[in-house]
Amino acid sequence: MNRRLLCLALASSLALGGCLRPDYRTAELDATGTGSIGARYTLAAGDRLRVIVFGQDNLSNIYAVDGAGRIAMPLIGTVAIGGQSTGEAARIIEGKLAAGYVREPHVTVEVDAYRPFYILGEVTTSGQYPYVSGMTVETAVAIAAGFGPRAARDYAVLTRQGPQGFVNGIVPMTYPVRPGDTIVVKERFF
Figure (cartoon, rainbow, N blue to C red):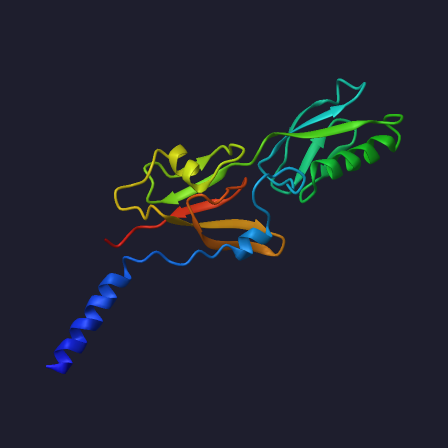
């Protein structure tokens, strides 16, 4: 009889264990920066930049950052800006233009379009979507046409590029998304 009760208790605890949501693990993701992307945002492949060279309309344009983290500009050729902030990128471009092309260049770099985010798993339409400033995991799910029928609706797994490589964690639906993030909505058991 005791053995039967023990087996019944073990089976019920295993079955109910699937109903629990996992603990959120956001510490490593938080270290990469959350919330407003502003000054901490580093440029990478997929970003589109508006570069304005004051007084030089033929150099002012929108440039795409290629896979190697570079943009190609007239006169100065390719400029490596991957991993830099917009202010640092402006100083790099100013330095190259000042080296014999433009006297006292003044450059402004703005992000015209952020790199996309990706959403996979139990959503209606998984794939790549344009980043919208201020978005959360929940708004990313809404952009992907909502949850699938078997989706875990209270958490997701988010992967982000950090300084030492990719970092991932289990996050609540209210967690902020940044450009280039990959979100996986898991399947629930019950």
